[in-house]
Image (cartoon, rainbow, N blue to C red; front, top):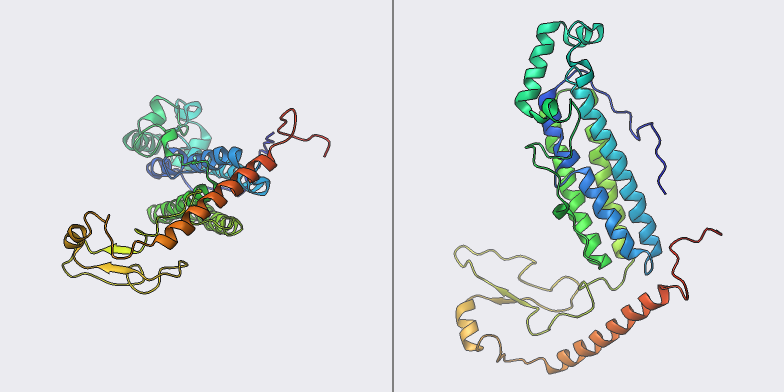
Length: 311
Protein backbone atom coordinates (compact mmCIF):
# COMPACT_ATOMS: atom_id res chain seq x y z
CA UNK A 1 0.00 0.00 0.00
CA UNK A 2 1.46 3.32 -1.04
CA UNK A 3 0.72 6.68 0.50
CA UNK A 4 1.51 9.82 -1.48
CA UNK A 5 2.53 13.03 0.22
CA UNK A 6 2.28 16.12 -1.97
CA UNK A 7 5.43 17.54 -0.37
CA UNK A 8 8.60 16.54 -2.17
CA UNK A 9 11.34 14.71 -0.28
CA UNK A 10 13.69 17.55 -1.29
CA UNK A 11 12.54 21.11 -1.95
CA UNK A 12 13.21 21.30 -5.69
CA UNK A 13 13.57 24.88 -6.97
CA UNK A 14 14.40 26.54 -10.29
CA UNK A 15 15.66 30.09 -10.89
CA UNK A 16 14.46 30.45 -14.48
CA UNK A 17 13.13 28.40 -17.41
CA UNK A 18 15.65 26.31 -19.32
CA UNK A 19 13.94 23.97 -21.80
CA UNK A 20 17.24 22.75 -23.22
CA UNK A 21 18.40 21.50 -19.83
CA UNK A 22 14.88 20.17 -19.16
CA UNK A 23 15.37 17.91 -22.17
CA UNK A 24 18.79 16.75 -20.94
CA UNK A 25 17.31 16.04 -17.50
CA UNK A 26 14.80 13.67 -19.09
CA UNK A 27 17.67 11.17 -19.04
CA UNK A 28 17.02 10.72 -15.31
CA UNK A 29 13.25 10.59 -15.77
CA UNK A 30 12.81 8.01 -18.54
CA UNK A 31 16.38 6.96 -19.37
CA UNK A 32 18.03 3.60 -18.76
CA UNK A 33 19.92 4.86 -15.69
CA UNK A 34 17.11 7.07 -14.43
CA UNK A 35 14.89 7.07 -11.38
CA UNK A 36 12.01 5.11 -12.93
CA UNK A 37 14.40 2.33 -13.95
CA UNK A 38 15.85 2.18 -10.43
CA UNK A 39 12.41 2.18 -8.79
CA UNK A 40 11.10 -0.62 -10.98
CA UNK A 41 14.30 -2.66 -10.62
CA UNK A 42 14.22 -2.67 -6.83
CA UNK A 43 10.44 -3.06 -6.77
CA UNK A 44 10.50 -6.21 -8.91
CA UNK A 45 13.53 -7.64 -7.09
CA UNK A 46 11.71 -7.32 -3.78
CA UNK A 47 9.05 -9.92 -4.62
CA UNK A 48 11.56 -12.77 -4.83
CA UNK A 49 13.21 -11.65 -1.58
CA UNK A 50 9.99 -11.56 0.48
CA UNK A 51 10.06 -15.12 1.84
CA UNK A 52 13.73 -16.11 2.16
CA UNK A 53 14.97 -12.61 3.05
CA UNK A 54 12.14 -10.52 4.58
CA UNK A 55 14.62 -7.95 5.87
CA UNK A 56 15.97 -7.38 2.33
CA UNK A 57 12.38 -7.21 1.04
CA UNK A 58 11.82 -4.36 3.47
CA UNK A 59 14.98 -2.58 2.34
CA UNK A 60 14.26 -3.02 -1.38
CA UNK A 61 10.71 -1.72 -1.02
CA UNK A 62 11.91 1.27 1.00
CA UNK A 63 14.56 2.18 -1.56
CA UNK A 64 12.21 1.55 -4.49
CA UNK A 65 9.67 3.89 -2.93
CA UNK A 66 12.36 6.53 -2.39
CA UNK A 67 13.32 6.20 -6.06
CA UNK A 68 9.70 6.98 -6.98
CA UNK A 69 10.09 10.06 -4.78
CA UNK A 70 13.19 11.00 -6.74
CA UNK A 71 11.29 10.48 -10.00
CA UNK A 72 8.76 13.00 -8.71
CA UNK A 73 11.56 15.46 -7.90
CA UNK A 74 13.04 15.10 -11.39
CA UNK A 75 9.61 15.45 -13.00
CA UNK A 76 8.81 18.53 -10.95
CA UNK A 77 12.15 20.10 -11.85
CA UNK A 78 11.59 19.42 -15.56
CA UNK A 79 8.11 20.96 -15.31
CA UNK A 80 9.50 24.09 -13.65
CA UNK A 81 12.29 24.35 -16.22
CA UNK A 82 9.56 24.40 -18.89
CA UNK A 83 7.64 27.23 -17.28
CA UNK A 84 6.10 29.26 -20.08
CA UNK A 85 5.99 26.23 -22.38
CA UNK A 86 3.24 24.48 -20.46
CA UNK A 87 0.03 24.16 -22.45
CA UNK A 88 -2.04 26.10 -19.92
CA UNK A 89 0.21 29.14 -20.39
CA UNK A 90 1.18 28.94 -24.05
CA UNK A 91 -1.68 31.06 -25.32
CA UNK A 92 -1.47 33.60 -22.51
CA UNK A 93 1.14 35.75 -24.21
CA UNK A 94 0.38 38.75 -22.03
CA UNK A 95 0.13 36.81 -18.76
CA UNK A 96 1.72 38.83 -16.00
CA UNK A 97 3.39 35.67 -14.67
CA UNK A 98 5.05 34.98 -18.02
CA UNK A 99 6.02 38.63 -18.39
CA UNK A 100 7.74 38.53 -15.02
CA UNK A 101 9.59 35.30 -15.71
CA UNK A 102 10.37 35.76 -19.38
CA UNK A 103 10.44 39.53 -19.71
CA UNK A 104 7.91 39.90 -22.47
CA UNK A 105 6.29 38.16 -25.44
CA UNK A 106 9.44 37.90 -27.53
CA UNK A 107 11.29 36.14 -24.72
CA UNK A 108 8.36 33.77 -24.30
CA UNK A 109 8.44 32.88 -27.99
CA UNK A 110 12.18 32.31 -27.78
CA UNK A 111 11.83 29.90 -24.90
CA UNK A 112 9.08 27.96 -26.67
CA UNK A 113 11.32 27.78 -29.74
CA UNK A 114 14.13 26.49 -27.55
CA UNK A 115 11.82 23.83 -26.14
CA UNK A 116 10.79 22.75 -29.64
CA UNK A 117 14.40 22.58 -30.73
CA UNK A 118 15.42 20.56 -27.68
CA UNK A 119 12.49 18.14 -27.76
CA UNK A 120 9.32 18.73 -29.83
CA UNK A 121 7.49 16.16 -27.69
CA UNK A 122 7.33 18.75 -24.91
CA UNK A 123 4.94 20.91 -26.89
CA UNK A 124 3.39 18.54 -29.42
CA UNK A 125 2.69 15.45 -27.32
CA UNK A 126 2.77 16.33 -23.65
CA UNK A 127 1.73 20.01 -23.58
CA UNK A 128 4.86 20.97 -21.71
CA UNK A 129 5.20 18.05 -19.31
CA UNK A 130 7.84 15.33 -18.92
CA UNK A 131 7.24 12.09 -20.79
CA UNK A 132 8.61 8.62 -19.99
CA UNK A 133 11.40 8.95 -22.51
CA UNK A 134 15.07 9.77 -22.43
CA UNK A 135 16.73 12.96 -23.69
CA UNK A 136 16.51 11.70 -27.29
CA UNK A 137 12.81 10.96 -27.05
CA UNK A 138 13.27 7.18 -26.92
CA UNK A 139 10.47 5.68 -24.76
CA UNK A 140 11.31 4.03 -21.45
CA UNK A 141 11.77 0.27 -21.80
CA UNK A 142 11.47 -2.60 -19.31
CA UNK A 143 14.66 -4.11 -20.73
CA UNK A 144 16.51 -1.55 -18.57
CA UNK A 145 15.57 -3.65 -15.52
CA UNK A 146 17.88 -6.28 -14.04
CA UNK A 147 16.05 -8.71 -11.76
CA UNK A 148 17.60 -12.18 -11.78
CA UNK A 149 15.91 -13.91 -8.85
CA UNK A 150 19.17 -14.50 -6.99
CA UNK A 151 19.44 -11.78 -4.38
CA UNK A 152 23.24 -11.66 -4.40
CA UNK A 153 23.19 -11.15 -8.17
CA UNK A 154 20.45 -8.53 -7.87
CA UNK A 155 22.34 -6.62 -5.18
CA UNK A 156 25.47 -6.56 -7.34
CA UNK A 157 23.36 -5.25 -10.23
CA UNK A 158 22.08 -2.56 -7.90
CA UNK A 159 25.61 -1.50 -6.98
CA UNK A 160 26.30 -1.00 -10.68
CA UNK A 161 22.98 0.81 -11.21
CA UNK A 162 23.62 3.25 -8.38
CA UNK A 163 27.17 3.84 -9.70
CA UNK A 164 25.90 4.68 -13.19
CA UNK A 165 23.13 6.93 -11.88
CA UNK A 166 25.61 8.78 -9.68
CA UNK A 167 27.79 9.50 -12.71
CA UNK A 168 24.81 10.72 -14.76
CA UNK A 169 23.94 13.28 -12.08
CA UNK A 170 27.57 14.31 -11.87
CA UNK A 171 27.61 14.93 -15.63
CA UNK A 172 24.25 16.72 -15.56
CA UNK A 173 25.59 19.24 -13.07
CA UNK A 174 28.09 20.41 -15.70
CA UNK A 175 25.29 21.56 -18.00
CA UNK A 176 23.40 23.94 -15.73
CA UNK A 177 24.45 27.08 -13.91
CA UNK A 178 21.19 27.35 -11.95
CA UNK A 179 22.24 27.08 -8.27
CA UNK A 180 18.86 25.70 -7.22
CA UNK A 181 18.91 22.99 -9.88
CA UNK A 182 22.48 22.10 -8.95
CA UNK A 183 21.38 21.81 -5.33
CA UNK A 184 18.64 19.36 -6.32
CA UNK A 185 20.98 17.33 -8.51
CA UNK A 186 23.55 17.19 -5.72
CA UNK A 187 20.91 15.81 -3.34
CA UNK A 188 19.85 13.15 -5.85
CA UNK A 189 23.47 12.24 -6.60
CA UNK A 190 24.24 11.87 -2.91
CA UNK A 191 21.28 9.56 -2.35
CA UNK A 192 22.72 7.28 -5.06
CA UNK A 193 25.87 7.02 -2.93
CA UNK A 194 23.76 6.28 0.17
CA UNK A 195 21.84 3.54 -1.65
CA UNK A 196 25.10 2.04 -2.90
CA UNK A 197 26.31 1.63 0.68
CA UNK A 198 22.95 0.13 1.75
CA UNK A 199 23.15 -2.51 -0.98
CA UNK A 200 26.79 -3.17 -0.19
CA UNK A 201 25.98 -3.72 3.49
CA UNK A 202 23.00 -5.95 2.64
CA UNK A 203 25.12 -8.11 0.33
CA UNK A 204 27.67 -8.59 3.11
CA UNK A 205 24.98 -10.04 5.41
CA UNK A 206 24.30 -12.90 2.97
CA UNK A 207 27.05 -15.47 3.44
CA UNK A 208 28.38 -17.15 1.46
CA UNK A 209 27.61 -14.84 -1.44
CA UNK A 210 30.34 -15.97 -3.84
CA UNK A 211 30.06 -17.40 -6.38
CA UNK A 212 26.49 -16.30 -7.10
CA UNK A 213 23.88 -19.02 -7.26
CA UNK A 214 24.28 -22.57 -5.95
CA UNK A 215 26.97 -24.29 -8.03
CA UNK A 216 30.63 -23.74 -7.23
CA UNK A 217 33.23 -22.89 -9.85
CA UNK A 218 35.16 -25.72 -11.52
CA UNK A 219 38.58 -25.60 -9.80
CA UNK A 220 40.33 -26.64 -13.03
CA UNK A 221 39.49 -23.37 -14.78
CA UNK A 222 39.32 -20.79 -12.01
CA UNK A 223 42.88 -19.57 -11.72
CA UNK A 224 44.13 -19.05 -15.28
CA UNK A 225 44.70 -15.57 -16.62
CA UNK A 226 44.99 -15.82 -20.41
CA UNK A 227 47.35 -13.17 -21.79
CA UNK A 228 45.35 -12.61 -24.98
CA UNK A 229 46.82 -9.17 -25.78
CA UNK A 230 50.52 -9.97 -25.34
CA UNK A 231 52.01 -6.72 -26.63
CA UNK A 232 52.96 -4.46 -23.71
CA UNK A 233 51.07 -6.61 -21.22
CA UNK A 234 50.34 -5.41 -17.72
CA UNK A 235 50.35 -7.36 -14.49
CA UNK A 236 48.51 -6.63 -11.28
CA UNK A 237 46.41 -8.24 -8.56
CA UNK A 238 44.02 -9.45 -11.26
CA UNK A 239 46.61 -11.80 -12.77
CA UNK A 240 49.46 -12.32 -10.29
CA UNK A 241 49.74 -13.23 -6.63
CA UNK A 242 46.81 -14.47 -4.57
CA UNK A 243 43.28 -14.43 -5.93
CA UNK A 244 41.05 -12.23 -3.74
CA UNK A 245 39.34 -14.33 -1.10
CA UNK A 246 40.13 -17.66 -2.80
CA UNK A 247 43.34 -18.83 -1.06
CA UNK A 248 44.73 -19.65 -4.49
CA UNK A 249 47.39 -18.18 -6.74
CA UNK A 250 46.74 -16.79 -10.20
CA UNK A 251 48.25 -18.80 -13.06
CA UNK A 252 49.51 -16.42 -15.73
CA UNK A 253 49.26 -18.14 -19.14
CA UNK A 254 51.69 -16.14 -21.27
CA UNK A 255 51.03 -18.09 -24.51
CA UNK A 256 47.34 -19.10 -24.49
CA UNK A 257 47.40 -20.69 -27.98
CA UNK A 258 50.26 -23.03 -27.08
CA UNK A 259 48.69 -23.79 -23.70
CA UNK A 260 45.40 -24.81 -25.30
CA UNK A 261 47.24 -27.05 -27.78
CA UNK A 262 49.36 -28.69 -25.09
CA UNK A 263 46.36 -29.39 -22.84
CA UNK A 264 44.16 -30.62 -25.70
CA UNK A 265 41.69 -27.82 -25.22
CA UNK A 266 42.10 -27.68 -21.42
CA UNK A 267 41.00 -31.33 -21.08
CA UNK A 268 44.41 -32.78 -20.19
CA UNK A 269 45.92 -30.60 -17.48
CA UNK A 270 49.03 -31.50 -15.49
CA UNK A 271 47.05 -31.16 -12.26
CA UNK A 272 43.64 -32.78 -12.65
CA UNK A 273 42.58 -31.40 -9.24
CA UNK A 274 40.71 -34.63 -8.42
CA UNK A 275 40.46 -33.82 -4.71
CA UNK A 276 39.23 -30.27 -5.33
CA UNK A 277 36.64 -31.54 -7.81
CA UNK A 278 35.32 -33.97 -5.20
CA UNK A 279 35.16 -31.18 -2.63
CA UNK A 280 33.35 -28.99 -5.15
CA UNK A 281 30.74 -31.69 -5.75
CA UNK A 282 30.18 -31.96 -2.01
CA UNK A 283 29.79 -28.19 -1.76
CA UNK A 284 27.32 -28.20 -4.64
CA UNK A 285 25.16 -30.74 -2.80
CA UNK A 286 25.48 -28.87 0.48
CA UNK A 287 24.59 -25.51 -1.06
CA UNK A 288 21.64 -27.04 -2.95
CA UNK A 289 20.25 -28.49 0.27
CA UNK A 290 20.80 -25.26 2.21
CA UNK A 291 19.16 -23.07 -0.44
CA UNK A 292 16.23 -25.45 -0.78
CA UNK A 293 15.74 -25.63 2.99
CA UNK A 294 15.94 -21.84 3.23
CA UNK A 295 13.14 -21.36 0.72
CA UNK A 296 10.96 -24.17 2.11
CA UNK A 297 11.32 -22.85 5.66
CA UNK A 298 10.24 -19.40 4.54
CA UNK A 299 7.09 -20.63 2.80
CA UNK A 300 3.99 -20.49 5.03
CA UNK A 301 1.99 -23.62 5.80
CA UNK A 302 -1.54 -23.84 4.46
CA UNK A 303 -3.06 -20.92 2.56
CA UNK A 304 -0.44 -18.52 1.25
CA UNK A 305 -0.97 -14.98 2.50
CA UNK A 306 1.34 -12.08 1.67
CA UNK A 307 0.44 -9.83 4.59
CA UNK A 308 -0.22 -10.51 8.25
CA UNK A 309 -2.75 -7.87 9.26
CA UNK A 310 -2.79 -8.95 12.90
CA UNK A 311 0.62 -7.38 13.51
